Length: 194
Image (cartoon, rainbow, N blue to C red; front, side, top):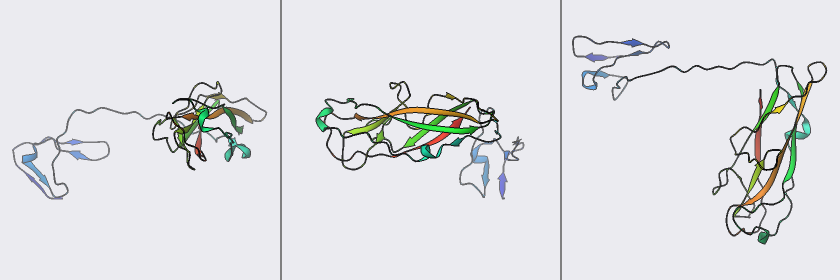
């Protein structure tokens, strides 16, 4: 690396990663590896914490790939923005949870509705409607990209805990006028432990 320095004294700081920073005026320093010099400012520290568990729960095979029928609804059923259909339940079940796993939750992710980002976007022709996911209480919405509430793992014999997570899905109008057509969507999920 080629350095040109002018001045009598330059203070350098060596970071834990081995990087050396030179807090000098850009006019006083040029390098062959950068087209512009940078000044150093205040900093801080970030601490990362976490743990590695012995293993995770197994998702029951019927829970990994589900087809949930939300029914057929007339477009005039949706009388205004925010109109919602009957909520349809679905379950995600886990088993063989080790004793180190006390709680389990779900992170849902999918294509967001362009009008209301908390809803799943639908494909197939219908417009002005999205799919809303809710917790077991049927009223607390689950936004895409956020973690659901925690469910306690019920202890079993020989570190064989299990949990049955209940959620609901419904169509929700995102416009004053809903146009007919298929209203399908896919949501992916990941399990979150403790």
